[in-house]
Length: 141
Image 1 (cartoon, rainbow, N blue to C red):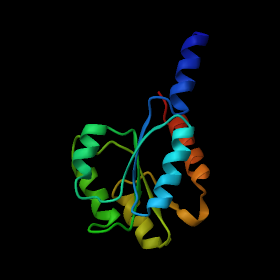
Image 2 (image 1 turned 45 degrees about the vertical axis):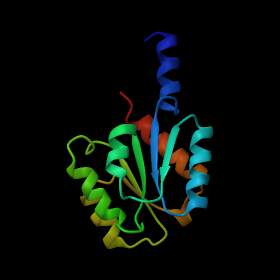
Image 3 (image 1 turned 90 degrees about the vertical axis):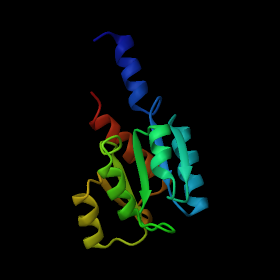
Image 4 (image 1 turned 30 degrees about the horizontal axis):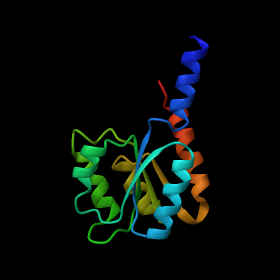
């Protein structure tokens, strides 16, 4: 592999050209995630209301979704089911986030197809960004 190709691959893995969709109803936290991920060269969109999120996923085509488990109007688990039941979106990796770490919810989210389940109290926004970058490094072609 040429040095240029290695550089391009590393640059892509580290965030460039990767899109992250944040589904989080806590505006301040969502903004912190967004700013932190943008500093890592990710293209980021954020949404607080899950109502039309499937349409946004189709148009934005994220490489990863950061999904809060507790949302207004629809739980993150229900939204996870919707995303994973759609053939056009079911391959998108989803990291569930929560303030309440319940073993039952964790297991259910993983069974439904979530890649990760992150307790917000255990990760800073930078820690979540590092976790996402590691995921892309581990799953690069």
